Image (cartoon, rainbow over all chains, first blue to last red; front, side):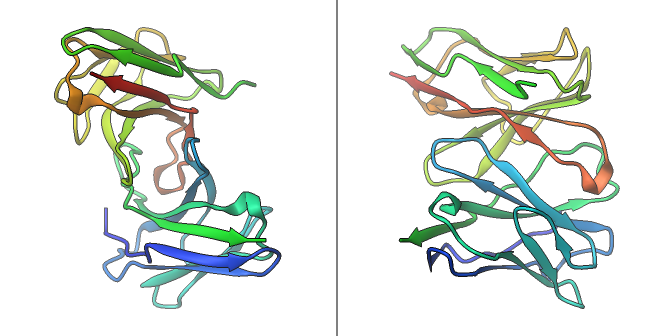
Length: 112
Length: 114
């Protein structure tokens, strides 16, 4: 699986939008972009994923660059409960098993 | 649905002792995984299973064994615990969906080896 690069940490104010970037310059045409987050003292949880088009769900939006070398996870209105480590992970369509390769992620702090 | 559950939540072992961590899922998932997470790090895969009766090694398998006798359960064993195995252990499960697969994680087991 190709490598991703994320900032170590970011800060946001409560009720403001947050844009979490991820670079994946070596992404292949069949790699899906996944985002997971890990709240303090909990297991990771799935947030969103996409291949080429932007995606929205109840938790967040995923904006994918046209060349797919970067993506951005968007939290439209950050809450204190969104403080977590966010992981950007690539998963290949043809992968024989589904283990996720976690980097260090981005630690998001949300200020009231 | 309980999702993915892990037993125990916390355990203290002495060097050389053995123990088994239990993971159970009620989503009828084919795939199950054991990860470990050391402080300030991302998760690393220990072992995984793509079906009942099958297991395979992940990135950091040394010192661990696993078994998947039933589809819903995945056991992680430490035969002779070492301080380097102090970590938080997470179990996950999923259905095979290629690149769109979503993993569901348990709450974790915190293990301290003295």
